[in-house]
Length: 291
Ligand code: SF4
Image (tube, rainbow, N blue to C red; front, side):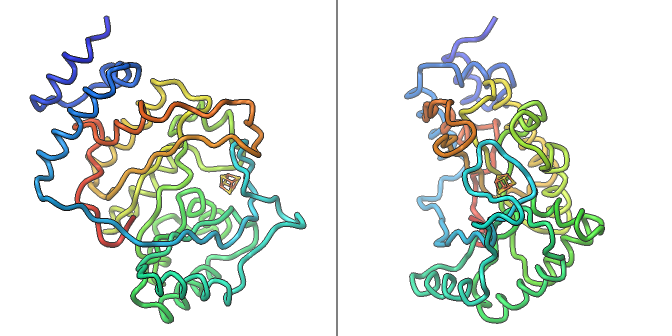
């Protein structure tokens, strides 16, 4: 039998690690104010300092050409599509210059899974950008892209990450996480990294000393238990490496996608757990290198 919200929160406030069934129960609970208050209490206990950190950065999508097919994505264009693009270097420079002029010190650079851009192309890009903008952290290339690079280059994951880091990659974003459950991923994506390999990209990056962020896109075909499974997989990796610096979740936006029959989700139920103590403690002490 599911335990009450009050009991779960009392145990959590007493320092107990949140279990799977209790997390599902909290996601179903209407007692949002109590959950939010408990989450805030533990956050302040873990981080009593009276300040929080943030980055000023800019998202730059260097290409929309993608070999994968994701039913929830309104951004990509398949190879050879008339609307496909790869940003010219001058456009990239201009976007970064604008970011720096506004006080930004980071770019989030992600794109589709381009079929022909080589690992050497990415290395050259990173070297060029770091030479021109040494003060700007390049938070770049989500796990689906990194995994794709290993396939295109036919090089092992560790080597790909080492080479990108040597060329100037500063930190890894957590894009392409969606829901880290293969049932969900297989139902709405084709040709894209699955759960274990998504996590492995972060694991190896962390083992190399890198830092990264984690994400979740919720409110589509996943169950509440699958949301919790996603959080649990991230928590396990965080226990193992401690390499995540932030967790970002957002709700599915159905407009202009193959999944536009799904209504937009309710927001608050799932936004709270990123502050749940013991659920996933990765919203702490944000690195100055990753957003
Ligand atoms: S891999 Fe990324 S860019 Fe490509 S279709 Fe999926 S979400 Fe869109």
